[in-house]
Image (tube, rainbow, N blue to C red; front, side, top):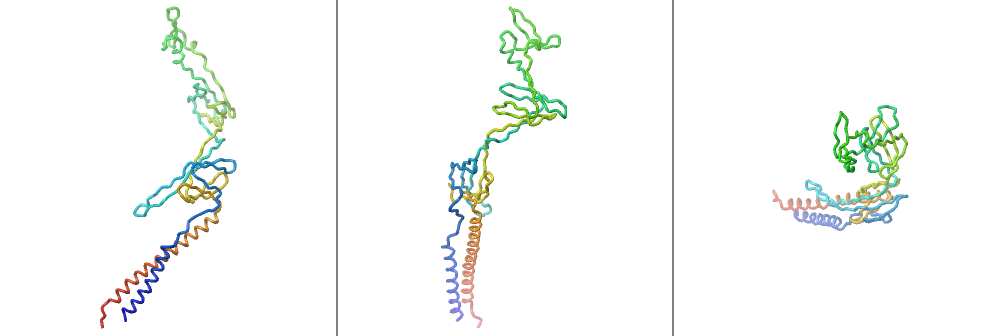
Length: 285
């Protein structure tokens, strides 16, 4: 009688366990999907948001290890690129530093006045180049009576000319805050003058990159989008956050029920083992 009752319960638990396992094995897990995204993109595609044009420069899929036996996960991501046609650039010139403008070197000169709003660019005379280009001049100067002299050859004889008289007077240009001048092909503005440095600024195109994570937010202009990578070659951008939240809840509910069914299958198997073991225990009577 004991074994007969155990057999009935074993059969019952086999049916329950098999049914729950079959549900787990045949159930198809829901996944995030957007039928009408704002943008359906592939690598190399361009699209516009407002007046700005963006390009998809990269779509990647990498397998990342969970570590400590945690398994591997496929991680998809992408990158967008756009050009800001009027980006602001700045540069700081320290006092007494040398800058190059139109292939000419200049020394930046700022006075020590705290209220100073002007600075001067003084041309750097390349004495070595001038001497090398003069066939009548020696490439090296000499010092005579404490002053540097240029050695010139005239009519077979040497002549000493003071360096201050031989070399041209350096040019100088003075600018105030707010003044503009041409620098590296850009119209440049004197933004600020201090006792230690000069800050200049200009506008020019600048290329920027935006990293995009799967199911992450990305802001383009003033618009926020949710990014989704359904496969290794496609990026979708949507603003349907309500649908996304609904699908997330469905996925969570599915996994909760799946875990429950796995629990039923495991408990059924354990119950079968215990019932069989108890049924074949020797009777004390």
